[in-house]
Length: 247
Image 1: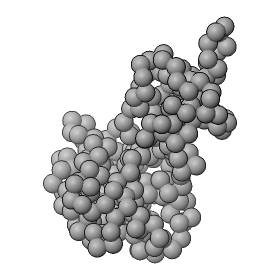
Image 2 (image 1 turned 180 degrees about the vertical axis):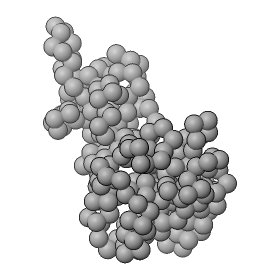
Image 3 (image 1 turned 30 degrees about the horizontal axis):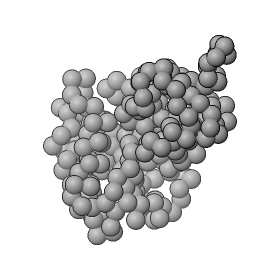
Image 4 (image 1 turned 60 degrees about the vertical axis):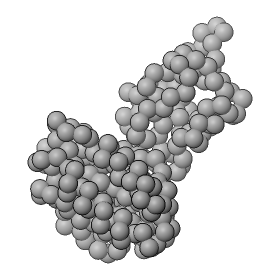
């Protein structure tokens, strides 16, 4: 069965980031033989004076295909992991949802979208998690991270929010690849423009520095933009990270 695992507010300014802990947790799911983990997505939440956060207020989520018998051991391990590994002064939260058991996916997606726009409370999160029968638990401090943890699953489930954790390495900077070659990378499903045009396999793209993919239409998509039209240049180049901050 497919599950979503999301964590939030596990770090402080000097500690390992939440993304690194999510990576370890996703790897441990496979090392323990519980299932196969997917890539991790980072979801930007509301930055507001009334919302406590370390630096960027973002949650991390990954999905995994697991055996049903592994679900409770996995949740128990993740809870212990956060309590042991989260930084001093953090307010970690954990959420785990089983995809096929979600009673109202749209309500969860809407919660995620609202977490990007308005200040939500822990009660908001617990009430929805109870209604939808989603695991949601605090693991230190105030436990305020439960809000972002639940929102992270909603945003991942939407299929149209978040940047994939880690940089994408395809050739050297300024090298040129066809879309078919780019999509041969295990973490790239498609190449599209910011306006939504999906490039054809034979089209060519100039690679930039520190590339990332984003979650669009439920796929890991490398975004590109017109190269500028210089004579002899290829039509497309990858978007700089600055433009990806809207995801």
